[in-house]
Image 1 (cartoon, rainbow, N blue to C red):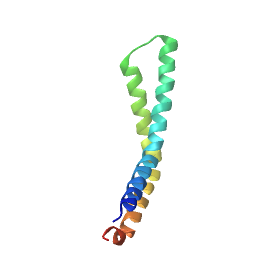
Image 2 (cartoon, rainbow, N blue to C red; image 1 turned 120 degrees about the vertical axis):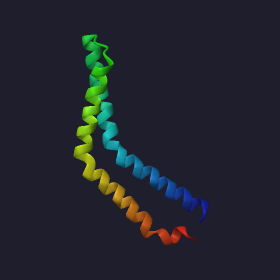
Image 3 (cartoon, one colour; image 1 turned 90 degrees about the vertical axis):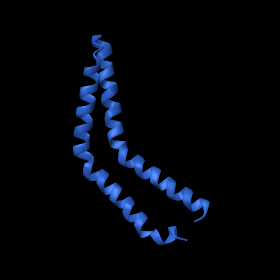
Image 4 (cartoon, rainbow, N blue to C red; image 1 turned 60 degrees about the horizontal axis):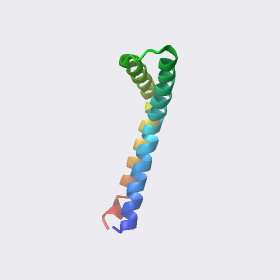
Length: 89
């Protein structure tokens, strides 16, 4: 296996991980910003008030985007196993 091929495999793995995690990261970021703005406006600095809505939003996002994330993970695994012969060289 050449170094360029190993770098290509690693780049594909990182890109697949990014696309699998991206929906939940966007949800957590946007809910976090909204909650922080609400805390600034109301001057309420309770850590539970910022954590619980973010966790609930991530749980809801996980339920909504789970088929997409599983599809991306399965497509990556199939691609890796399909090229298994190239990795042995």
